[in-house]
Length: 289
Image (cartoon, rainbow, N blue to C red; front, side):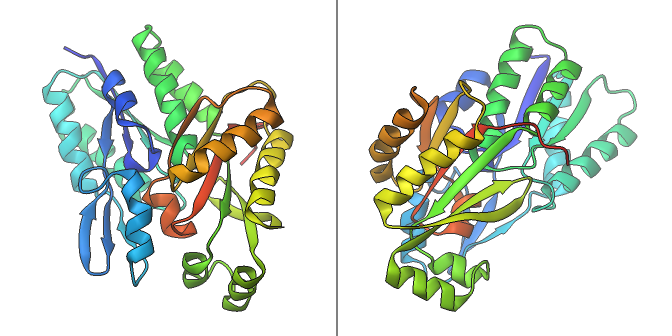
């Protein structure tokens, strides 16, 4: 009988093999696109979502995971004898999912005062592998005997350090979402200009605008090198496998070592960047929120 469970949500972009290896429990987001409803990781694989976006007429809409869904899952784990449950949430300022999990945890405690299961809810303040990679480390910690308190302390610290750097190669979705003006998007498409964003603590900020795809890949690697803590692992995440080799070359040249992982961006990021995007995930200096 497993005495602890680590939960997270499908925005973590973790590969299935890692999920299975550590017995993670993934709460999956629901997405509406052109009138059709889908559940992430169940109805489509991450690498399929960019093609769905390319063919879509409208913008995708995601719905938060509800309090009721969390409460049901908490009850199931308690019935299975779990004593420590940690749920790591998508950025709380960008989704009501974190608040729903907190309310469900409080409701569970009120309705089941006799339960031995302790629930911790952690706001990752981020997305993609910036959310997912620390969950893997947390699982390893608990598997090696660390307490829930030690694990939660680690998570809160590392999430104040994780950074996401993004580049969008097409601006259709960003323009429709209102993150940049229609005029700027059209000019960018015509001139081949690609905005590079940071996405830290739920805040997106354009840090550079680069002309040309190869120049953008080189700039992404160099910006990551400037911002990351030297020697720490980094991850290359992309909408399409066609970006993997080029970014691996540029990032290895910039850092001197290979990425800890390469994978696909999920719907949480691509719903805002569009179907042609690359993200670099790494550990930077600690931020004070």
